[in-house]
Length: 222
Image 1: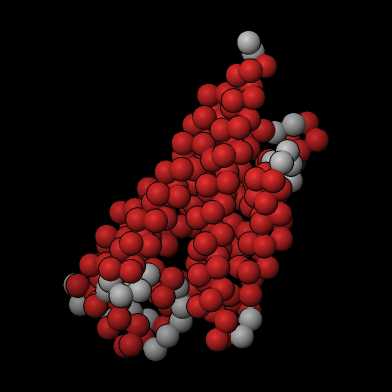
Image 2: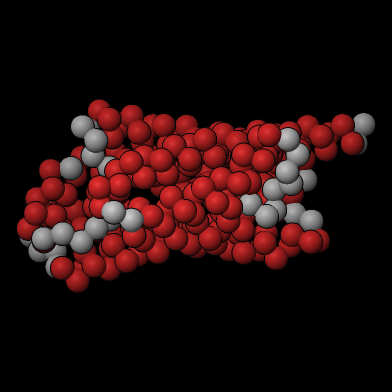
């Protein structure tokens, strides 16, 4: 169990670092992110913007594909190590949910690459394709909210850091995440930034929670 917790802590730190790297790429590119292409838009306009952003998107996907590995590993390993008989159901829901999120995330990334390849070979995008892109991306996020909500019932509350983590998973992230898509349009940018900040801070908190339990388990065996 201790080894799993240390591994989960390391993966959480790595996930936070990859998020920061993607933020740096976006800032250097003038604010271009994948999220801007997880929407339905007029096909010609969408295609022109995606083509112009192709270099940034490809670079971002290097880090995002690795990010999927780290967040899936961190959550699955960490929660499995922290699971108790009374939280087994929540652990199972969270683990299945985060793996489903990762698979949808990878599918999204592969679709971006296939769209870019298709455009380079002369294939036109279709409105139906963009509709499915938005549906799958939105579904990915909402499955993630559900998985992390369940994770909030696995992590024991033992101090301020775990308290902040648990309640951000149970309340903060789901509310902010849902409002991005259903709230007023002029809230979207601020809410998306808040979601990003919560994800970044959340992985730092996960790392500390997993590491603290790893240290405690080491003391128990001495």
